[in-house]
Amino acid sequence: MRVSRKQADRNREHVIVVASRLFRERGFEGIGVADLMKEAGLTHGGFYGQFKSKEDLKVEASRRALSRNKDRWAQVLAETPSDKLAALARFYLSDAHRDRRGEGCALAALGGETPRYSPELQAAFKDGIEGYLGLLDGVVPASSGEDRRTKSIAALSTMVGALVLSRAVGDEALSQKILSAAADEIAARSE
Picture 1 (spheres, rainbow, N blue to C red):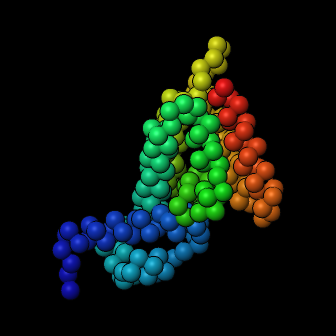
Picture 2 (picture 1 turned 180 degrees about the vertical axis):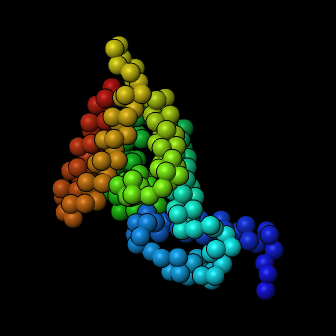
């Protein structure tokens, strides 16, 4: 039975959302197309009617994850009256973010895998990084002699690196120390 164009679009959107979560939880190769479609509640055969390839889905799911996380950052910044950089760092470097990999930052979950894949996937990550840096450019303090973009890159690198390390150690106390040390360091930069 054929589905309407509207339903096909909804199904495609649903697959992107599910893939975005599953790729962040398991990695790009941690789930195959059949299991991904099963998780989405759709048939395996329907995949190729929606996407050219798994690589195509990786790009779209990554763009979606990066965009949604950027929107969350923008929301945190909009809701924070002062000390925005510190608030963003504490939001990003939280236990909740560390523990909910499937809902969290695609940079921390998938950034290390990205160089193994297509230029299109790398472009999606580049665009996502530029979006994050654009938000950071608006909140890092300006000081004489320092380029705001350089400070934004340092803040983003510190946050992503700390999140990756906090997930990698398998030790709650050390993980927490990594998160708080990085958040404190970024907060000190905002003063």
